[in-house]
Structure formats: structure tokens, C-alpha cells
Amino acid sequence: MLRSIEKSKPTNQNRRDSVTKLSIIIKYNHSAIRKRTKHTSRAVCSRYYPPKIIKMPSNQPQQDIGTLLVQVTQVTADVIVVLLQILYSIVLSLGRLVIQKQPKSVRGEIVLITGAGHGMGKELSLLYASEGATVVAWDISEKTGLQTVKEIAQKGYPKAHFFKCDVSNRDEVLRVAKETQDKVGDVTILFNNAGIMPTHPFLEHTKDEVERIMNINVMAHFWTLEAFLPVMKKQNYGHVVTLSSCAGLLGIPNLVPYCCSKFAVRGMMEALYQEFRQDKKNEVKFTTICPYMVDTGLCKKPVIRFENAMKLVDPLDAAREIMNAQRLELREITIPRYLYYWQFVLRMLPEKAQGYIGDFLSVGLESDLS
Image 1 (cartoon, rainbow, N blue to C red):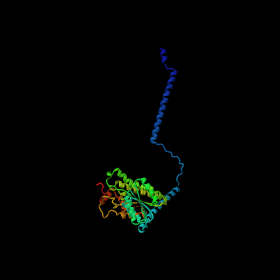
Image 2: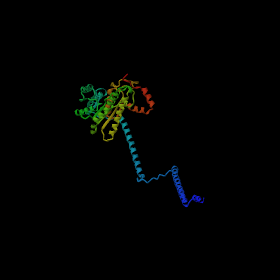
Image 3: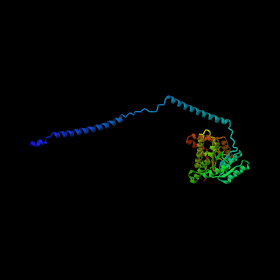
Image 4: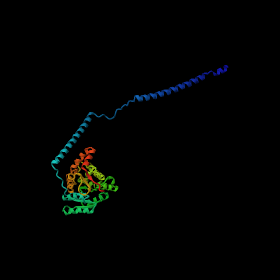
């Protein structure tokens, strides 16, 4: 009995082992509690007490008041200069209403006109020839082109030249341009006049028709400019005149692709003017013409409510206006002139008001398919 009790009593070694185990357990639990408390404290602190961002001193010196005053003075001076330039331009424009600028002579100039076999191209050819210019007539129709040259010769004007050319074909334009230069000389006035105007609803235009409109009315301008503008720039002398349209100012039913083409050439001419204007010594001029409906047969079924007030423009009158604009070096005009300002006023009105005015005037073109 005593032996069994003695065996059950813990020895000193057992006591030491138990104490060691207990201390390890306590130490581990204490360490875990400290870590948990530490993470919790950081989360709470970062939530309620965000860390302060300490800005390090910059290496760049702060802008002093003197530099700032210089910059403000410079900008103020630039603004004053611009205001004076604007005032000068306004006074100059008003002065030209009183003192008319003399149109420059075109005698001896080499004037190339695309689409010269009929319509506005023919009228321009006869008019420039009458003023002593050497006319180069381009047209896709050899018959009508030669007829224009024949009429110029019959009137006793300087010799005119005809070259057959499809202006929508880039390779042909560049080839005929080289032939023109070799036989006649460097073109000094270029008229991009050729164009077509199918008139029917947008959804009734075929793919081929749309491509033909864009190729003749827009892309041809790129090819003729590619052919003749480099020489003009090199010589710092020349004039490019492009026939847009009032359909390039306002959208018109039954003329969606045509309007698109005329808006495009207006944008192209404005961008060219701005680009060449960067050179302060530039003497190459650009003029855009936006005529109302001209009585050349191109407008097949015009609709005009007030015919006496808005009748079709006579082709010869239109040609004279165009030549006058070119000789005065005007950048853009409409025919008649009041339409240039009218479209700006119309654009300032609410959209519905614009529609009401359009309905009231009722000017446009019927479909050529009906």
C-alpha cells in the first residue's frame, strides 16, 4: 500500500517538467495576444487617425514674385496687341467699303479651269480669255472642251489650250498636268470647278454613284493640288480658286452626298489657307466660292417659293463675281453676297426656328428620279 502511494506521488523531476510546459504555454498565448492587439491597434489607428504625409522639400526653387509679374505683363501686352490687330482689321474692312481696292490684272496669267466644256467652267474660260489670260481648258468631254477653245479663238482672244482629262483619276491628272506644263507653262491660277450633282434621297443613291460624287467633287481637288501647288509654293506665287456651293453652308434634302462633298472642299480650302498663312511671306492665295443655284442646267428640278426674290443666278453674272473675288484676293464669298451673312444669322437661331424659316422659304431641289 505504501509503495503504491509513493509511486503516485510526483517526483521533483515531474514537477520541473510540468512547470516548464506551463511556462511555454503561457509564453505562446501571451505572444499571440500581443500580435493580435498590435494588428488591431494599427487598423484602428489607420482608420481614425490617418498617417500624416510629410512633404519633402523640393529641389526646384519657388517662383518668385518678380518672374510672375514679368509673365503677367507679357500676357497683358499680347492681349493688347491682339485687340489692336482686331480693331485695325475692322477699320480696314470698313475702309474698303468706301475706298474700293483695285482688282489685279490677270493678263499673261496661265489659268487652268477644270470642267471647262460647259456651264460655269465655259463662262469662266471665256471671261478670263477676254482679260488677256492664257486659258487651259480641262474636260472629260473632248467635244465640249474643244468647242470652248474654238469660241475663244473666234472672239480673237489669246490662244487657249484644251487637254482631255478625267480629274477623278489621279494618274491621269498627274500625267496631263506634266503635259500641260511642258506645252503651256506653269499654271498660276487654278480653278477646281468640275463637279456633278445627282439629286435624289440619300437611300436611293447607289454605292457607285456616291463614290463618283466624292471622286469628282472632292478627291479631284487633291490630285490637281498635288500637281500644281508645289510649283506655286516654290515660286511663292499663284492662286487656287475652288467652287464649293451654298450646299456647303447648309444641308439640303435630296443632296446629301453633294452637300458632303461641298462641305469637304470648304474645309480643305480653309485648312490650306491657315497652313500657308503660317509663312508670313506667303503669296499663294486661296479663294472659295459658294454660289446659290446657277442656271447652267445642273439644277434640274429647282423648287423656289419666291422666284422673284430668289431666282436662279445667271451664269455670266456668277462668272463675273467669281473673277472679281479672285482678282481682289477674297478668301470666301457667296453668290449672291448676302447669303454669306444670312447663314451665320440662321446658325445662331434655335434648331426649330431654322426649320421653320426653311419651311417658309421652301427652296430646294426635287428628286431627279421622279
